[in-house]
Image (cartoon, rainbow, N blue to C red; front, side, top):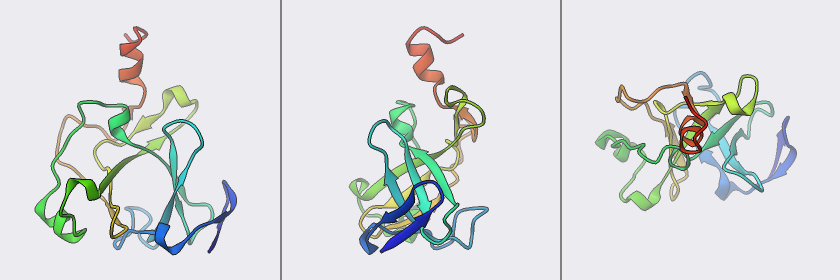
Length: 149
């Protein structure tokens, strides 16, 4: 299948790559089908709508940036996505870049949870006051490099 995108032009994909958000993504409820577009280098990927060329989200694995990041999936979510094992799960966070990449933030409060087997997904709001919807993406890396405050 050919997917028209604003950012990447035409992409070729297969039905097996499609990820379905049955309830849509908050703010984009009518767009339910996406693919993950891998970048050649670096941790960034794109969650690209297959229905709307101009709709894509920059995503990353939060575990690549925040080693202590953790949360539990509710039993309801596990049931909704038919998750039986941890190996079935992929977790991504949406990145926002306002000016420069160094100022990027990531939404740790509402990660994207994907069942890799069934290709179903949801943006899951976790109840943990320690996580922010605008967590600076590079804060821990800068501190580890001795460049933080």
